[in-house]
Image 1 (cartoon, helix red, strand yellow):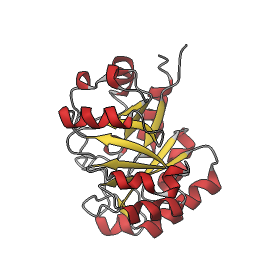
Image 2 (cartoon, one colour; image 1 turned 135 degrees about the horizontal axis):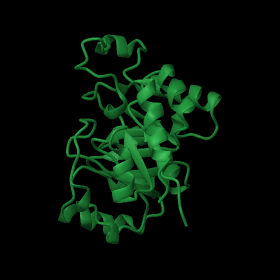
Image 3 (cartoon, rainbow, N blue to C red; image 1 turned 90 degrees about the horizontal axis):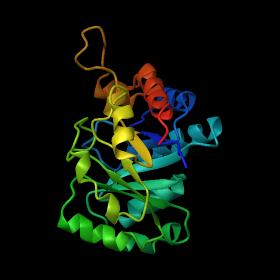
Image 4 (spheres, rainbow, N blue to C red; image 1 turned 135 degrees about the vertical axis):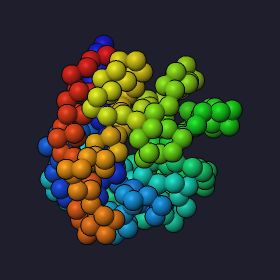
Length: 233
């Protein structure tokens, strides 16, 4: 039976981004929290405010907190802010499954991988049995870099859960990615941002982003979603 591929737009930082994502018809929206190395990182209070705005504007879109090696306390704050999912890159502390938010199904986990090796395969074998893990996500070695990786390395036959494809996707190649990989969903961040190399584009400074100016390109977001939705697998 044909299925529509889900679209997740990540690295959102302001209400303008929320409006663009909702208008485009994306299914998931992601915000980076507790990772100050990222230029897209938000303080949890600001993320909670943006999350509230999302919920006021749309009841359909699922909201994802994107993290790297989160602590138990950080997971609790993410849950209390009202996120639907926590996306975990880096180290997954198995103590997180003991949180009542996770164990009671109030906060589901998206487990993200930036490489695929024997350790990853061993963890996947364990997580396949964890009901709290909703999805996997396969990304490039450096998340948020806009770099691609070898899609053929995704271990389809070993996965008992749906997965997102990320890393180097853009409106120009996402249709091909959906056809080749047939993921549950696709994830994009830098691929729908303003072009840093375009002399006619003024890319916002970190201070401007912190003040609420968008890094995203609304037209790219719309085109990305359109390209995904026109492919049926």
